[in-house]
Picture (cartoon, rainbow, N blue to C red):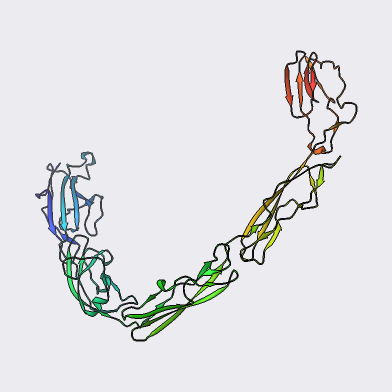
Length: 447
């Protein structure tokens, strides 16, 4: 079994059929060569790449591929032969060639003349979509077409900016070019009529907050005239604001003043608008007696605490009123209270009427200068002689803790060291030695 491939060039090149994104391509069929008496044979083909209309890609299909409507682009055509009744024969050699369909059809362009108003800035930005009246293409979707415009039919761009000079020369001829994805272009000519139908109009800046000046409770009125916009197709004669820039306003956070902006054109037409300015105090209060030296005392005799008296923090503010100072720590202690031994950190927060805050901390330090005292004698347990435990070369020894008392019992702690008869350290710990295992011999316990 063998196959005779179609007599074609390596690549068949054709243009698309008019109005289609395909082209019907015909070529000689492939032929099968078999021995006499061989059952019916089968021709199959497979398309790769751009493919053909209503034909599966990358799949062997029975029949001849000639006469199909091949899509624009490059398609590889593969053809093979087989004898289905004799599967052991396998397949013949594979024929392979290419079909390239070129899109040579330009878009069907439609244009429209338009009349557009210039805005308050006497400008209009023209984009190509305003001139398009429904252009279509055989291959490219309208949304994927490239639309460009030009004033000289030579340099095409994405948009055109018209200003007051163009308004005087209206209507203006504009060229529209539409290009499909394969580079085919179509052209048309339109007229753009620019009109000014906007009376002189002022657009005010946004209302805003003005921060109070440093260490003061007033704000400075800004120059808002530079920020407003007006329709300047007609010449503007006068622009002013009341109150004038640079004047001060306000006495407290939240005070509001309205600044009125006015514009007058050469024809006497006037427009006004107002901008509300709100004074905002962003300066936190300042403590007048904080930070201050730490309050340092010793504990009362036999006590683990002492009474501490000190001046409470005071604060002042640039706006002068509504200042509160509150204690914001969780100690529950303040001046005149009984403070425990150790360091207690007190926190005070000053808040002004605008909600700005400052924090001050004071340390109260109570030092314990009393040494622990023995409960009985010198506080140390008597020397002990203990027999070794059965099967052991030593024994666990209990009830040898030192007995002391202290004015700050909760702060009393014990450490120990075990020394052998040569004075060498055996072990140590952060507790008493009761319950430790002692080796045979004499061990000195330091606690």
